[in-house]
Length: 210
Image (cartoon, rainbow, N blue to C red; front, side):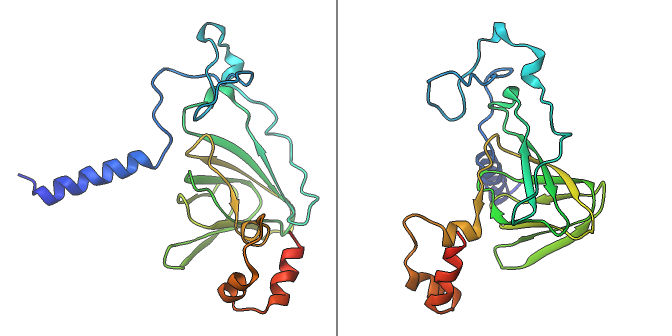
């Protein structure tokens, strides 16, 4: 007979795992009705009798995103109404040579990334401030755990492309630098001075970039 500690430990694990993703759907599907005025955790459902194959399909991810920006990075979301309430989303990432998807957090989702073209350096930081990083080549896959700071960087001389999926229909996106230095109203300067151990001029300079 298993010990009570093992039993309740397993029960706690199952409970935590259940809370770490979107709620399970209570029907076969819920096609997003973008015209609905109903407010809920997700989008209201389209009439099931009007559902068609196109509700479960998306096109356009073969088109490269525009990376002509300071980060040299672009993200394109797959717009699939049929993913509503199913707890998953899909994205295309494009990177110019040395382009960067800067450090950020998805506070509602784990992310899995597959490199389609090029070479990417990827990494995430654990809660003990340990950086786990790896250089990926075409066909390689990498996982970024839920809620941890992570990034990707193109380390090749050519453009790179990746496909990423997240375990939520709305993963959330918090860019670290933008959140800290671009918040409105601003985080008090003395807080940032002490947090980053720099003088106020440095804080103001970084803020000017956001």
